[in-house]
Amino acid sequence: MILASFLAVLNPSRASADTNAEVAAQLSANDVYITNQKLPGGAVHAGDLKRLQAQANAASARNVDEKLAIVAGYPSNFKDISEAAVSLQSFLDYSGVLILVSPNGMGISSDLMSTKSMDRIIGRAQPVCRRSYADCTLLAGRLAIPAVRSAENSSFRDAIVLIAGALVGLAVIAAVLAYAIFRRRRLTVPIPT
Image (cartoon, rainbow, N blue to C red):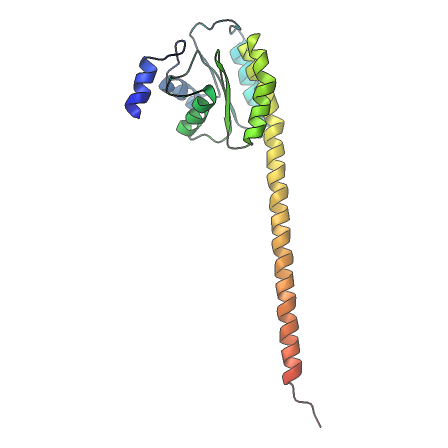
């Protein structure tokens, strides 16, 4: 498997893939990575790195960790960019939102929101990639913040319901036990004559 990944990096079927090691090293130390390879159409412009970093900072201020990457390609051992994003997030052992954009599409990997939310974000942001890779990455990053916050609120609500249910269940059990003890005492207490 390691040899296959290594060979895929050396001989990518897609346009000049950024190596896993290169992207992983950059994203381990930074929240943003932009390839230095030439991209077809929708080129990256001066100032895009700062705009992407500002988005990652804005997300962080809302307690949502984001890593944003624009790559020239991804290794051919992945069936699509979404699989590459999942693999990269796993390799980084990263908890947050990872957005990976290439000329071949957009992939999002996150342990903080549902697959349905990620697909919805991709559906809205990917058409913008035809105009600008940075703009579609920014849009996906912006859309991820409320999606993560909503998932967190839903999880919190679910936890509250679970705890409340457990407390009600314990209260019912305590009431039944108290009634049984009270009834037993009443039946075993001798009646004075």
